[in-house]
Image (cartoon, rainbow, N blue to C red):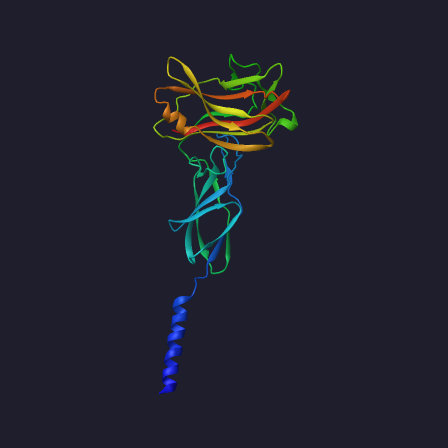
Length: 284
């Protein structure tokens, strides 16, 4: 009888341990080193700055991961993995988002417990886009010019130290004799409003802060609306500038220029802004 009692106590204890410490699922793992991007000849450069992977597995949100990444998945067997390319909106690390102008990538994979599956997503632009501007500075005519306020001009440079890719990039120089640069697109554009996406892409490096935004035209006046400030950087960077909020807010405006503005700081005698691959894009 005593033996039966102790056996019963032991069985209850073991059962309690299993209840307190249930068996854990063994995850599989997915690794993404980078997301590649390609563009057609009519879409300009394939330069990109995809920094995050927004991942869905079998239609369920599996998380957002900074690249490169390896992450656990509590699923095994055949799974459908979908990856959306993520960017820093306006170049700000705290504002990460899926880039709406790139397609997602997806594929089927057999996931195994405690095993790493390496995937290599490759994406392209979405198919319903309008490229209002593609300025790569390779041809003689530039789609931007100085305004009446500007002391200097946007020029082409073939100096290897100032060229991002190809044979030419754009360059603005400000100095003590020419301290203000104010450059805008030659054309004003009819951009979609009502919350529709409008993005400005570009590659840049600069010695000095550069203001970027739109000039809104309402028929009686043209008003400058700064959107972002480009911070000094000695290396080339890619930025995706979200023009959508200001374009949608200016409901009385019927067209928009894109502008770049530089004021030489008092503590500098000369500064250079290099730019390439300017793209103004919106949904058709």
